Length: 382
Ligand SMILES: Cc1ncc(COP(=O)(O)O)c(C=O)c1O
Image (tube, rainbow, N blue to C red; front, side, top):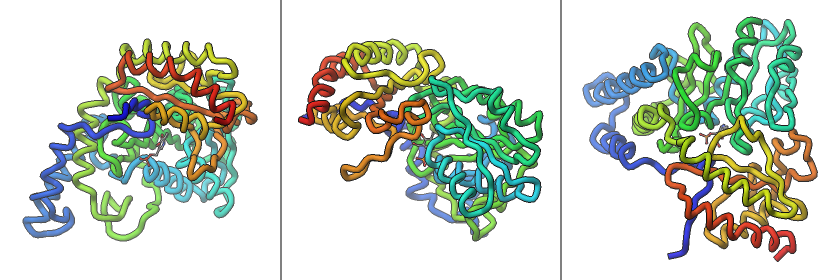
């Protein structure tokens, strides 16, 4: 059997067996449509209501503040399009940061190009942080929405979102945070901790199923819907609910978010060893914050080669890593995050290792051992 070392937990995590077990009845005997009035549907409705109550309890929210979605992308789209369109008569200025996930950035691009909004993209400091002072200065009387992610997927930098949110609240501006990479990795108390009106969550980042997520919407905010049809999710997200996915999301959240399944005490020393190995390689440079970052994430750029060559070389060794950018069929989109860090000439050469629950010291040692040669071969184009 070829070796597999999976260091790509920020991309996705395996479904936990107990979470899968809890989902199975909803892929089998409980198959009704929760909107049906008959008893088959009502059995599904009872399970859906119970899942929403559990999610709300876990988040410290009201059940009506929980909107089940198909994951992080949809939660972000609903938050951004929904809030911007709702509030456009108040103002058409929006603020985000330069290092958001595409599921945020592309929403803002669309609103600017097609719907007449003006978007300010906040810069980041060399560690990838969005300064609270810079945000304060960027808010204008016509600003209606600010979106800053809680933790970055590519370089792991953690943002002071509770402070960003407090500034927005003081100025009467709606605040959204994409917390997809936060849940399961950083301490969680309740949805209020971000001082946000809108919080995006995605199950498959913490051993839940793919295609399941939620958007916390602080009442009384009622974003415009982006999907139209039935009156599901309190008129905010039309479409028959993915009950098995929702059960999996809620189960994984209860099991893996508090305390976080990504244990800092275990992962920090492993990530430190990997970072040490990277730092010794000629032409490699670590990126992101040394202190204010997710414990599982080590990201670096390399002189004289690109991510595709590096990832292919790692894969030959059985190591699954990622570039922050979208690679497909030999083409590479430069990393927006590395550009924002002021290193545009390195934006094609990002490699991200993201460790998780099953990562071991032996795996880290192996990667540390093969990495210099993988880099050297990639630099030589071999
Ligand atoms: C920060 C962030 N936001 C949003 C998403 C999109 O989530 P999903 O895969 O559930 O659509 C991801 C997934 O990589 C992410 O890392």
